[in-house]
Image (tube, rainbow, N blue to C red; front, side):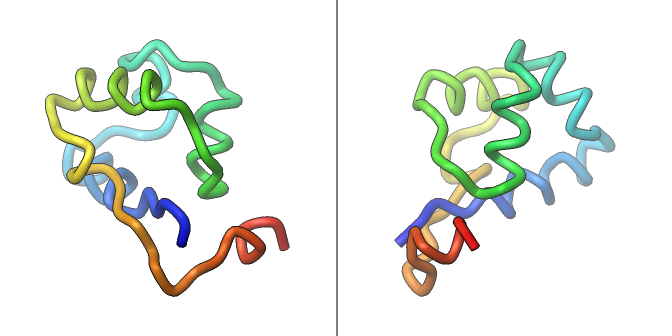
Length: 75
C-alpha cells in the first residue's frame, strides 16, 4: 500500500493552480513538491500546510492505493 496524491493534482486543476502556486501558498520546498509528484512519503506537517493552503482535508488530497507497493514507486 502506498499513498496516492492524484486527488491533489485534480484539486489543483479545479482551483486553476499549478505546483509552483501550491509551493508558495503552502510554504513548502521544491523538494516536497518533487516527492509528492513521485508519490513519495511526506510528513503530516507538510500535508497540514497543503490542506490549510487549499482549505481542504487529507481525504481531499490523498488516498491509499492498496494495489500498489512501495517498490512500484522506486522503479
